[in-house]
Amino acid sequence: MIAVKPIIQEQWVLDGISQKTPAPEDDALYIKPMLPSEFFVSAVNVHNTLILDLNVFKDLILERRPANNRFLENLFRTVCIEINPTLAIVEQRQKYAKASDDLKLYVTYMRKTFNHEITLENLEEFEADLERGKPSFIENADLLSGYLSAIIYLYHQNESAEKKLEWLAGLILYSDIPIFQLHFYFAGLVFLVKERPELFHGKDCEKVREDMKIASNYEVQKEKIKNLSNDLILPTTSIFQAGINSKTLVFPYVATRDRLCKLFLSQIVCEAVAEAGSGRMNGDWRLAKNSILDLYLGEAFALHFPRRTSIPSRADHLVRKSNVKAFSNVYLHKILALKDGSSHIAN
Image (cartoon, rainbow, N blue to C red; front, side):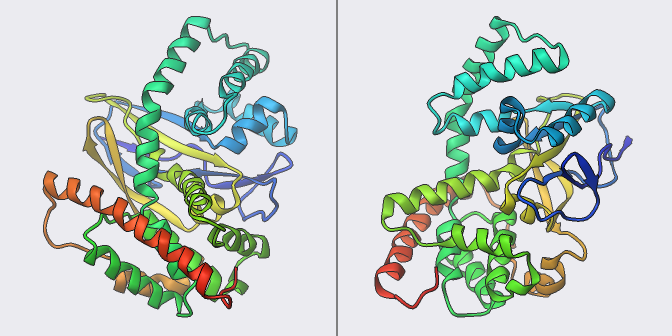
């Protein structure tokens, strides 16, 4: 067993300057270790990787926000950590026809900045891997979007944040759908932002209102939910194994500029990780101590978090995955019904 600690601490970077307190500016870069602050594992090696979101990836290849870019580049040169744009690249390929052009820009960036040459053969192999992995990423994003339509629906109800959490927990158990820790915490966050906006920065409240706004029709609303799901998939997909039966632990960190993602990640911590089979890992997520969610909704989460007493079988998992798609669609229609029939609802 070896003791593992993060080599980079949680921080906000603004104009190339790191600070330990939140920076509310849109340009601020947020870096967060995704595993517990100290834990013991049976791994032989630890591989540290910094996962870039799409905003940060684009900053680097397009030379936007140069001061923050120089901070990251100095980090990669002085700390034993890998630059990892894979998640950003996979997300981009869902909807951007010129994603391959950006990948070529990344090859040029790595050559100019780090004198690191990515061969044409490796590039083609990587693109082939991306195409093979794309359907799985889309499927996971769709599955994890299952709560979002219900969360938006409940957001627009005139009840307290705690009552909405109680309702959501009941819907999850009654509908026999998977329990997603992160999405339940996210629900509490947006419910609290609506109920107590004075606790949050004005731009964070504005971002939540925009993401919770009801669209004009079914297709537009479905696309909004898909985009929101892509933002929220970052903490889930950032935890992974080096490979099946590998003796190396991957310690992930994330770098993001997305305002809602920064706010959400600052409210949660991963307390433990467990193997989920086929090279996958699951994180055990909790509220960050003394975070806004912990202070104002901690007791409500403890009381209402959905729990099942029996261990699910493979058949249970398959049924619940199927149920969540129907559940999502039902609440998509309920959202639009609110739009059509309740003109008093604030968007």
